[in-house]
Length: 218
Image (cartoon, rainbow, N blue to C red; front, side, top):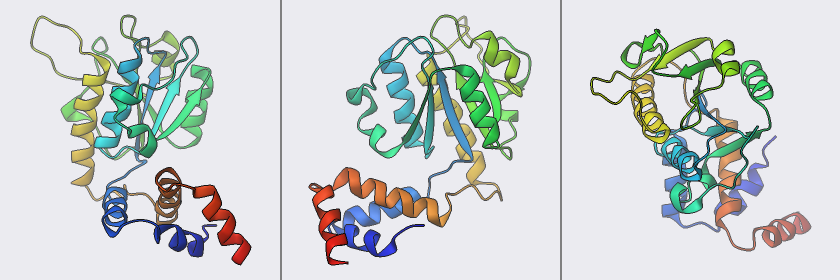
């Protein structure tokens, strides 16, 4: 249960511009789609994917670190990791199990499977788009567990794109189609309130002291 009095108190420390910015951004956020990266070697690739998720309104990113475990490159992510929720997993099995429990279909992004082209993708289903390692692509485990496959049409000699580029292209397309649909894709009111408190925490200096004083007075 959200403490609305606390939320109001915290937001009193924000400028009107910042509060309006939070409201505007949250109105475009969704959990209807999410993204998962699997053991990406290059740190800047995962960071760039997080940045694209923030830009296109994807609230959650799932990072599988079964082999590789690195910190997010804040310079590449441009602070996006503050505004996007990162779910970290130690295995593909746990990642897929958790996502399926949350109602997501697993979408393997690969140029090598004959399935849905990007422009034919059905945006009505809750979906997690999996992106694999730079050279090997997705693991066989993801391929075996995938509910469907998705590829970006390409007409050149090059057979693949950098994962951060692929993510940006796919997310721009599917979020645009989603927002043109009748699907209830936005965060719930409670989810938006939770993020307002979380973003206040990440924005306000001396946050802990402010919280302590608030509850002492209350």
